[in-house]
Image (tube, rainbow, N blue to C red):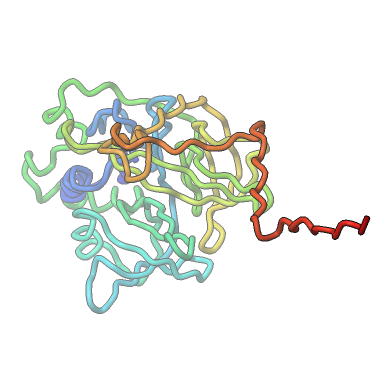
Length: 316
């Protein structure tokens, strides 16, 4: 996901704004490596899932409405009880835990901004909560807190962003209202496709937090038919959650990715492999008989030769 994604509206209160900025810095970024890590100015304030910042931006983000039920052992792990009665394993990322614990009524449904993941064995959906989308409720709390806060605490999210990133671009606008329960935006490389079973797997690259870090990848399973051979291509996918699966609703091919070079095996040659061990030059090599050579006749033993019989001479 692009680390510039802000799951909160511009009208969030000051405490929520500080939580938003901190949590974004600590959560996993899921965008192309060329995208800036913190460009909150480029986020469309009117929607929780902004349009992609560039054609080849990797990401996987969605919206799920429901109640978060933490486990008794750990508050950051639990289940999300969706509005259609499905329980999905869920974890809280970053400092969103402080927002959920101190400012949200967990007995009510909320529209959560989540990162989707696929369980390796079961292949079912797993969620990582990164925010909540409730601009109306947060706007009311903003007005109340502004009356009791000083000027520094009442600083808007836009001002905080400009002070930390003065070179950030201006805000983008879009008419696409990506505010729908169960909607997911997935952008990445198709690495597996099963036409008979109508499902495929997308590999999504996460932007490294530091320039020296290597990018990480994760795989996401979607159900649906892409109508063409898509392995090795970058696709922009729109999906809808159905129980614990992501079902394709719209797909657009973006580009064909370059083929990866084959890895060369290093190290010494294996035993018995090429190059073959050298033979001792002093030992003569055996000569094989060719098919053209005539077979030699076996010698007849002397005992088998009949002796001549002497006949007596007739009398005169």
